[in-house]
Length: 218
Ligand SMILES: C[S@@+](CC[C@H](N)C(=O)[O-])C[C@H]1O[C@@H](n2cnc3c(N)ncnc32)[C@H](O)[C@@H]1O
Image (cartoon, rainbow, N blue to C red; front, side, top):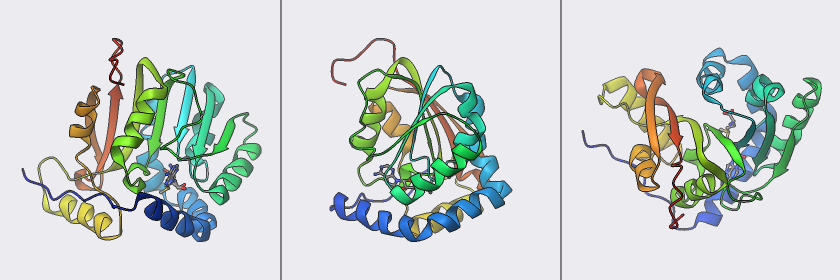
């Protein structure tokens, strides 16, 4: 099946800055929406059973809802680019009495040593990143060999069904960068599974494992 994936923006800094302005305005509403919409909580919550510890990094944790659901069980770290989202996340996590290490940072420059984490978690955020290769290479770098990326995001339904394709195209029209994620995982040498978990096959749960044999290319 032929799908029309997005082109990545030429000005990646400009793209990230624009999204950041949007999240600055949207942060309190986003927090309310995640806590209120069961469908969103179910989609991102599907990632939890795939987490392997002990050390977990959530990239783009938003206002921290997902973290409040698993942080007590793992040594938990997180980064997000938007400081307003991060501030709300901190409040949510304090209320949940969890101790986590949060930083404001860019997925393109993760402030961690190579091979640090057992799981890198990423929900509903990869389609916001302007450079998919750079983002995935950073995720891969900070994973230990045998560690996994657990990702929930939007992509075309594998069978090309109409409602799922329509929904994916609606996200794309809204500015999300829809990529061929399986091809990207393969390019970076991941073994992966791809499960459709909602939205007529437009919401995917990927579990992508980094090979135990370290490839010097990465
Ligand atoms: C739609 S929200 C998803 C939040 C949360 N993961 C969830 O599932 O509810 C996207 C998040 O990605 C973050 N983000 C966007 N670009 C980023 C970047 N370059 N580096 C790190 N985080 C980024 C935004 O600040 C925002 O919090």
